Length: 228
Ligand code: SAM
Image 1 (cartoon, helix red, strand yellow):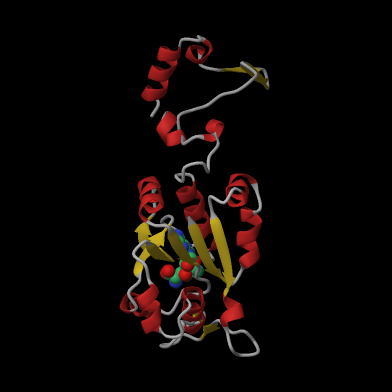
Image 2 (image 1 turned 120 degrees about the horizontal axis):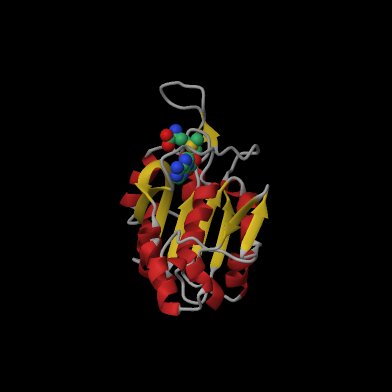
C-alpha cells in the first residue's frame, strides 16, 4: 500500500517512519510512503505556501496551487483534466480537518481494504483554502475530510501519522505474530499485565488478577471477554 503525505514539515513525518513497526514494514516492501515537502512545489523565491485570508482575520490560509502541483507531479499530468484521466478508483485523498468525519478503527480497516493508495494532506495555520475540496472533486478524485478527534491541533502531521499507523496495522504482514491485531485477539483496551506478580509500592501490594495466573486458557478467554 502506498501513502503520500503532503506537509510543510516533512521531518515530523520522517522521524516517525524511521522507527519500529512502520520502519520494518517499509523495509519489507509492505508500505511505500512518500513525503512531499509542499515548499518544493512553490514558484516564488520565498517558497510561500500561505496567504492572508479574504474577509480579514489574524491567521494565514494555505494556498491551493502548491498542493495541486504535488498532485499533478505525482500523477504525471500538467492540468487538472489530465489528473482526472489518471485518477484510479483505488486512490483516496484525505483532507485532514478538525471538522471532518471522525476517524475510527472500522474506518482504518475499511481504508486498508478499499484503497491501494492514500494521499494525506496536512494543513497548518488557519487551514487550507476551502475551494481545494471542490477543485479535487471536479478533477475526479475520491476525497474525504477526516478528523482524528474532537479537538483542534496545530497541524495535520500528527493526524496523518495516526491514520497511516492505524491503517497499516490492517495490512497483512505489517504486524508480527506477537503484535497481531489486538482488536481481533481480545478486544480493544482489555487490561494486560506482566511481571512481577505482586508489585509493591509505598507499602501497598498491587496484584495481577488470579485468573491470569491459573493456566486455564478457557477461563482466561472468558475473563478477557468480560473486560471488553
Ligand atoms: N481553523 C481550522 C479549522 O477550524 O479547521 C483549524 C486549523 S488547524 C490550526 C491546522 C490544521 O491542523 C488543519 O488544517 C488540519 O489539517 C489539522 N488539524 C487540526 N486538528 C485536527 C483534527 N482534530 N483532525 C485532523 N486534522 C486536524
